[in-house]
Amino acid sequence: MKKMTASLEDYLEAILMLSANEGHAHSNEIADNIGVKKSSVTVALRNLEKAGLIEYKPYAPVTLTAQGKEYAEKITKRHRVLTFFFKDILKVNDLKKIDEVACRVEHALDDEVFEKFIELAVKHGYED
Image: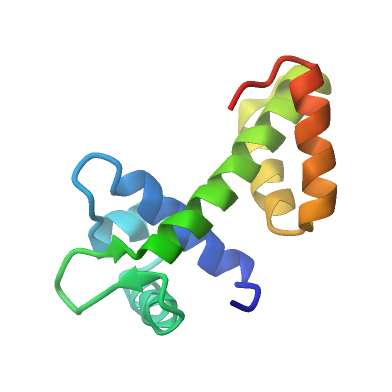
């Protein structure tokens, strides 16, 4: 699969989080979570469905495919590790700033560099 845009990765991350309890997410919940209009969600969901990452039909709940769940979990893990890095290693105190920066950086790291972040985080007490 080709690399997704940061925006589409954010949608996957939101769908994963929102579907944790009921196994699915709704378009309006996704829009609220990401802070976009519902029309933007529809366009993104169509793209994610074309990529085989979600099951999507208009007016129906959204579910992740196995591939989509794996991808979303990968992005979510990046966010958690980077949040740990900024908060517990670099001692950044502003939680909103940590979240914003982690969200931007998680999309830019390649796998090799991210593995180095994991190694460093584990040395400082990070547990997955």
